[in-house]
Image (cartoon, rainbow, N blue to C red; front, side, top):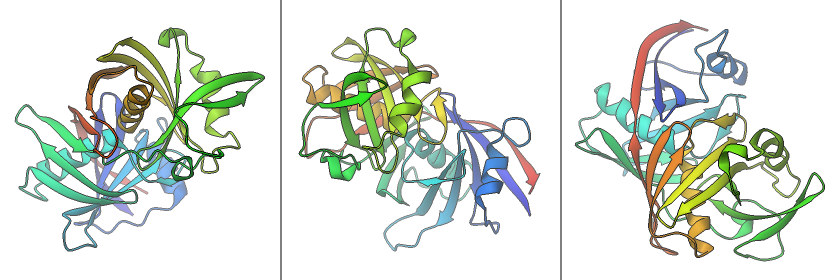
Length: 276
């Protein structure tokens, strides 16, 4: 199977994006792992697949596969790259898109400054929606990890996120605690883990250990989750600059009952063909 693809990134969170409309695509997990392999394949954090919509009121279907071959529900940086890809490839002339995902409907808008704004939907705050095992909803949850008792926030942005506040994000034990929290038995479907350092009410720094991918340079849904948790803790303003290792995102969330809005760049690196 010979596939045409584009290599893209959103703040260094990188993707192999494949047009599944103008070519036939059937990817097995092993093939996804090969595409994602940085030595034997193309190299990426996730593989994104563009498909025709299966609903009359949406423009496309958007599927996301982690580097380990598993399909997941949501990827904010990928959503921005998806919007840029379908427009630049001539699959649509629209600047405002409605896209079907496993997590539900996403609305994306290409802005005049070449950034993309994504309506990430309302955060899901009940622990069962993550899913996370807890007796009841709370702004903070105690959790035992490696002999330590941590307090985390838990939110679903269509995919599960745990957020832990740290004093110095550069020294945060991402490589050690990230995998332990990702596979903690209180998260039945694993979890993305954010390490948040609050600089000011309108400014945070963040590192994210993503399930199935490890630490990435940026995580759009993780940035949204961190701002939601910070807002629930009474520490953040409605509009927040989120500095990730790969660059900055703008996140806006007024509060419960409202969507989280994410704005940031999407860049095409190169295009090519690969034989699988």
